[in-house]
Length: 304
Image (cartoon, rainbow, N blue to C red; front, top):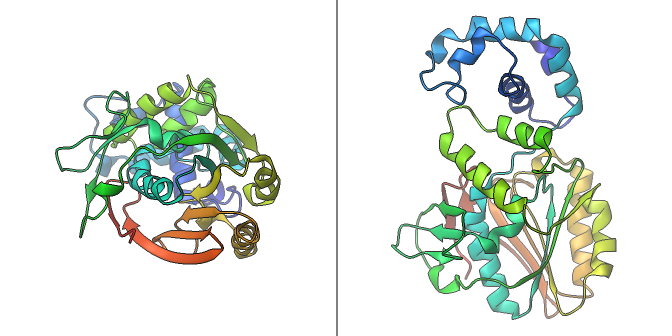
């Protein structure tokens, strides 16, 4: 087990990668008694308390296949419900700048979060925000003081660009299955949301670039018209970046901010909080704006 785990690339969340590899093979149809424990594969799963022996046996039997996956793939969970807290942030930005937005997502995987303006949202108020007829409806809970509903106008998005070291295409069967395998077996709602969002994005126009987002940011800045405001964002990605890369990213954003308006929304850079840094009308603002649950089920937000 440790030998398998040690084959992961540096910086990867090893447990997610290991369990994702097993789930992936089971979802592909590899036959083994271990499948009887997975709620994603059977309606009547056996107790997980009894799963360890079968799990180790599966890893032994399919060591070669698992090694190939762990060495080649990376953890790229597209958690679409994180859009629940991104939506009010981008609505706030749009209201502030009164210009169309150019979204650049670093670590975008399949780019599901790049369509945050095309989904609908509920926050327990009885109101529906976003696109009410969207096939993707996201439900989340707002903790603490709620001062964001007045900010909830649908932002105008002109450009959507996703960058990742490895791009996943939801129209590709293998990529789709890998993203699905990274969702924990007992999380049925997350799986259903992923399926709906993936189906939606598969029919949209989207630019996905394979490469280093930090390195590419400068050239993308040159491409985007001045009448659009650049919004760089990433969620639960920066924890996989070396410290030198994090610093370079912040420096790049500041350099662009010396010439034009730019907003940077992120978490997991140096802490788990949600941050909004921006350079607007020649002024710099660096703020911690909230706390978020990893899968977007709840969040707190202060945009004032």
